[in-house]
Length: 80
Image 1 (cartoon, rainbow, N blue to C red):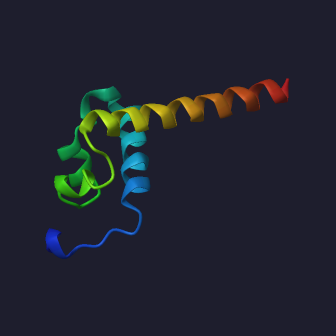
Image 2 (cartoon, helix red, strand yellow; image 1 turned 180 degrees about the horizontal axis):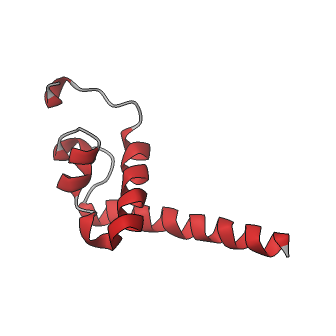
């Protein structure tokens, strides 16, 4: 499939999902724009349509991780 003809349904969501998966597996070292773009089969430039920089992408992944942690902690406390 040609990269320039590929349309992604919800690229921002896909990048965050794959970013979370990579962060869980390897930490923050594989959260670069090029690597994550490759994993979701888009060009790195497509990523920049949703995130102004790699740092913004990492910050969004970090925010999502914190929100997930907060949900899990609240769930654990509720079970006590």
